[in-house]
View 1 (cartoon, helix red, strand yellow):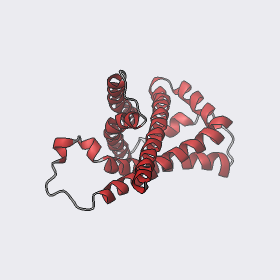
View 2 (spheres, one colour; view 1 turned 135 degrees about the vertical axis):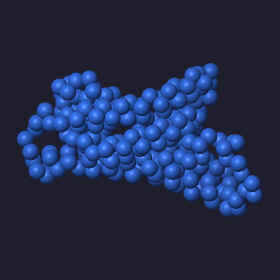
View 3 (tube, helix red, strand yellow; view 1 turned 60 degrees about the horizontal axis):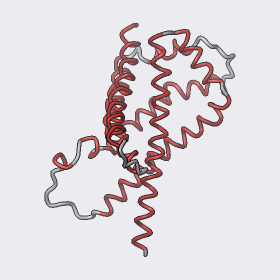
View 4 (cartoon, helix red, strand yellow; view 1 turned 180 degrees about the vertical axis):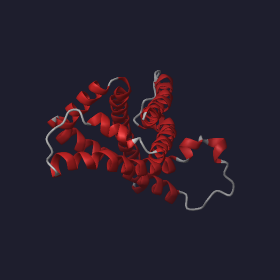
Length: 221
């Protein structure tokens, strides 16, 4: 009975983490779409960013939900990793990980930690200045400031390189995480192979788009 309860609790944790992952994947799609506009049109990017920056629903509902989703996803990742390690206290005498699983699946915790560090940099670069501008300094809303602030962050080659490396590791994380999330929520049907391919494309296209954005604004200066 106790063993069954532990198994059910573990399954629930995996499902909860998968759902938070799917939620964050949706956010990534929206985020990369908005940022890619900065390559196409400075004015449209400013308008879209200003709308999102002062929309009450986004600022006071979606933003806290997103913050909770990020924290929850990473905490659950660490919990499940520790749980899996505890379930195998004795290391295998011989283990050839590459023969049984991809690099991305074997190193999700590593790519996750790098992404977490990247989020810290991203908050430092964009979220904290935004909070300071609007709520601490109380500056007058300026709908034309967003493009210039974005471009300024990619002036440094070191910072641009850090962003690009983080985006590449995000791709590795998504390569396994997308398919794993769908599997955890029980999507085993005739569309599972198609959804897996969509996940692999997403894991390549979205990080590549972020890299293109960073490099475009760096070399354009």
